[in-house]
Image (cartoon, rainbow, N blue to C red; front, top):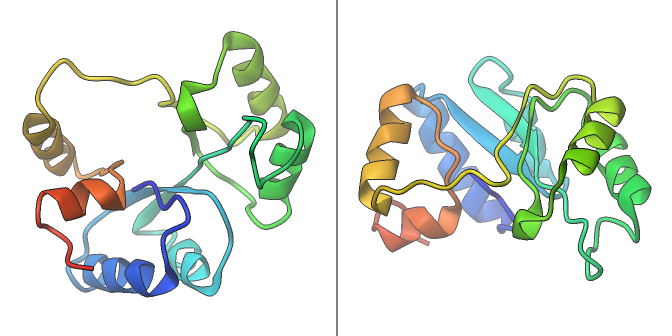
Length: 144
């Protein structure tokens, strides 16, 4: 899930449902809040990734180092990364890996040739969902 500035009440609703049903999920985080802490507390159930914004309008920092420091200040061991706006390159990935050695994968440029519905089913089948809350709302799977 890409939480890209989702409201805490939406996050609580989603996380409570996932915990109740013991559904494993991946969260790409953009900020820290009490609701995000609830996700971080469920390390057996949830996989954590960062969703850094290296674009000029970023609220996470003015440059690469500040953005990574923003995440480092509250997140200790993310294992995935998904950048905003497909803003990535080999150079950035190497720099991110040096700053966050726990990272295992980058899905910044992952795109599928299948339909959104097929993609959703594939993620459900493998037990990891890297979908945005907007996607769930679009398909009527999450009421806000």
